Image (cartoon, rainbow, N blue to C red):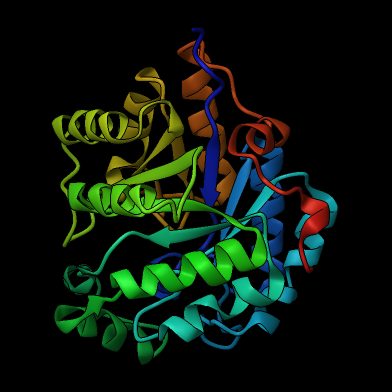
Length: 310
């Protein structure tokens, strides 16, 4: 069977990086909309989106914050809009699913387990901060567990999946998360085709070695067979090399300032679109075709952009 075109996901802003880490990190609704639209124009078929407080850049779960940029992105691109249910540190599950339940996007992300999520090593790389919340936020991750229990996941699958018609980007930070997903598949609480995002390089999750990528792919394909389509997120400096490796293995890729604020060693990325263009160029050089939004909707059996609530 010929290789399918590679899906490029762009995660535009996230909740890991703080404004002091890069002047190019989008914070305001205007910035998020512009960055998302440019990323789609550069070749991203899926836009993975978080919202932020426009005053100081902290992660914001309020659906009204998303509504400041989602309609413009929907009107100006054909990209699949994917709203995070991961949110940010110290958000409750209620907080994290508020926007998805109200806005009913085509896709949502879903972390497949609870885990340590250590951001505090970033503190060693910077001494000055624009906002007081930033170092406190990073330090709090030293004693933080991102919570997604089996009960939490069941709730999100029911309320966001069944209730809103969203399909999921299943975020797997370690091999155990694949087995958690298999548990829900066995119970028929999820159905294929599954879009699984392997995440490498977060402190608390699996490391960014190529051997781990091969193992995660083998495990996913053994557990889910033809029902799985997988993608790779390499955090920080691992973004491009792991993405390229994944694509040569028949996988899909994710880039964006949520995952890395750099475009090359020591060089800050000036935009999300810059990262998308770089990855697209790598894939082109490898003779790998790029998936269009209509390809994604067909492959993942999405409900269509006309069936959202924004």
